[in-house]
Length: 67
Image (cartoon, rainbow, N blue to C red; front, side, top):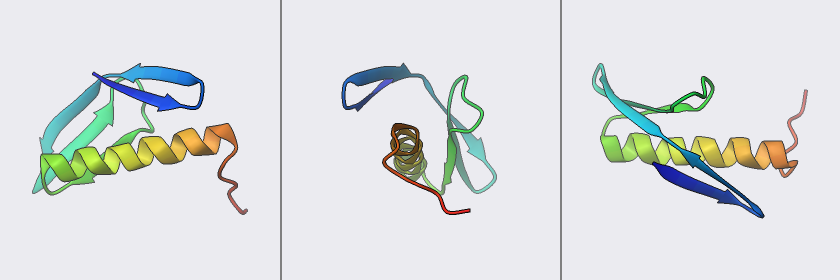
């Protein structure tokens, strides 16, 4: 279980890690769009943290995507 904080919001997430080919796939349980790959467990978890951070910033309006 991981707790991610953003400003005044806090959300607990359960992280799943599984072997996938030559590396590891990590995902947030119950969230189809929050996943990442890494060649080691540590790398996969770090990448997932980056994905969660980007999505959190996007939803908070900190990131604007160009069409």
